[in-house]
Image (cartoon, rainbow, N blue to C red; front, side, top):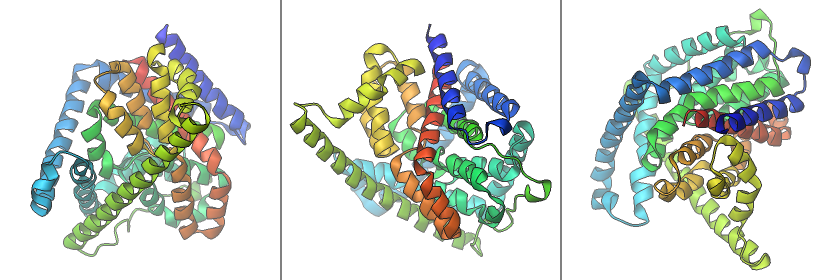
Length: 396
């Protein structure tokens, strides 16, 4: 029965995407079908095979080793503060790890290792799905870098992007996560679900965006230029730039958490005062519970899971992950897996401003167009998160 509900959820997501489409005649159904198949094979391989389990365990071990290295730097600078109990733990032992991962990504980018990998994975995806190279490259790039950085990496191709192509690029960025903060995610939630969400969300973003904004491009416009993706002139300059960028991200995430969690508490207090003890999160839980049920969440846990998913949409994934973290041992494994996959993306209201602002900095006219379709972007990215979580739930 759970599989039937999951299939129904997938059909519902695709139907909503189709209903939102601005060019139904040019939808690439073959490409969408192939991407769905790729999601099913990827999830089956990672969850249901011994080799897949070893791959996940290996990647998790690699991330944990990198986190150990990062903690050495944190401990050296902050001493005993990094291991003390209390409110300081999250900032010191989770957010500051971002600095090390950002530095590592900057170095790998400067050495042309990541650009090479991203370009040719994007090329393979483009060949399989029929999507243009820029959109495919951007989708893969978004798995490694933040939404702003991924968009900036293709700024030289912006002159070729019409409204539909701009939507797909923006949707891929919103539906992704940055590799620099994956280490922080797996400090809070089970690593296997965070890791499987990364490729699933890449495909889901492309599937939904391809329904909403189908694209066809001329051959001469279908190019990707990754020659100058790093502005650093030396290895050590790349390290320094990466560390500074990581520090900014850590502080920004910390500041956003303070603002969003404070605002959420205020909203809950206001709702409880007006509606006899009912909080905003409880309202969100009841609204999203039917969707959670179709995604594979047990009826008894659907409201609680819906509350966490709703929190992520109106705030950000970190706030929602902090809500889910203490419940990992209480909720069923399937609910934890489904909700974790849903949370592992940038699909929230604040991302609209981030993406629109980034595009505005590259092209003022295109930035205004992104702002106009901001809600459409958020709906599409949220549909992508639902699609990814549902597919993961089919194998849990």
